[in-house]
Length: 464
Length: 84
Image (cartoon, rainbow over all chains, first blue to last red; front, side, top):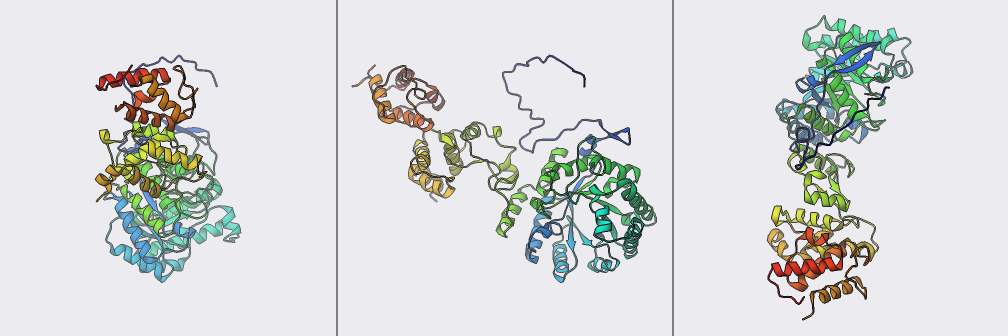
């Protein structure tokens, strides 16, 4: 690569440039994209229109009750109905969380589906999930669903070693029989190409999808096959220049433009085995899938799926608008999930108890001076979660002052400066230096001390 | 009445447990004051002289001599009688 040396002139300023066109604070930081984006496919440059994502009808789909439930003990009927109700509120009137899928195999599965639909929400639409077995369509039809996912594994690992087909042709014929059965039942099939990132794309996946598209031409548009690209083991990579079968750009290109699967019929389903799950979902949106399949808090098989709440903030960042999404419901969902025993790590983005809690005194100092320095966006407005400081020996007087001001809800000139918190700051330091403490100090302990050291404030703000 | 210098030195010596305090001593580098010690000292000076100091300005003071100058100035601004 040749050197492109260039001198860079300092642009002196007396006022800060906070780059607010990208970091508006009232929204998550915006993701602004520039065209053209070029990927070399089969030796030729192919352009992708990333800027179009702002106006493309992209959506989030949900599999909390299917993949999410495969990773934990079953939810009760009441729990699922409540979660569905919250998903509908989160989704908003535009149906950003467009679909969620249900098992249909047990009486409890079917009753849950019925009760969710009885809530009367337009979104998320309820879809099913079945094996690629003809008889299973009876369940879908009886449930009155318009669409169902069906397992159509696409790698030779699955075709030969799991499903024990004798040849790829036998496998495709079998899958297509089930697709035909779906058409006959008047149900739209959504073919889940399991393990696609480990499959022979040219030799199996594309011929199979070609055949599905030919079959779709024989049925009304609303029944035409949808394709879910399942990165079952998390092997997918979003980097430009990646090779098939792991390349997400190339996979989507092949299906979208060579096989003619329109974007509104393409969905990405990822797994987090290599820590790529969220970014891979975002890449799938950009390269042409309209749907990214997710679970609440990323809870799913093994390492999990794209976190729904992460996709929500990605969506807002790409669109530059809330689009009717009620982000506050994320906090409500997190509280509810914790209450029914789902472990959400404290440092888990957007939902963990301490996701916007700083422990470093120097960061607490920054927060105290100007919240935006160390808070990712207006978490109070969007999540009902003001930035916080956890008190340890590293918090310093700045951390203690921040904690006490948040605790009493003091703003602007009413805030207590750090000289006034010296007694509490001394008590904190002595906990470690004198008492030999090794753990963070809980809010409950600090509240007792706040009452002792700030009786006037306590009386005024907490006395009632 | 003791002078500002005598009162500042007495408080500093008492707080930090040091016998001899010199005007050029830095609170942190020479006298070993840690973060919380510094705000405690400011709070003690405020109480001793009956004044209120600006937090940032007070905590920016580095040496004992500078503290005496700063406190003298604040006392005058706030109409507090002192012995210089």
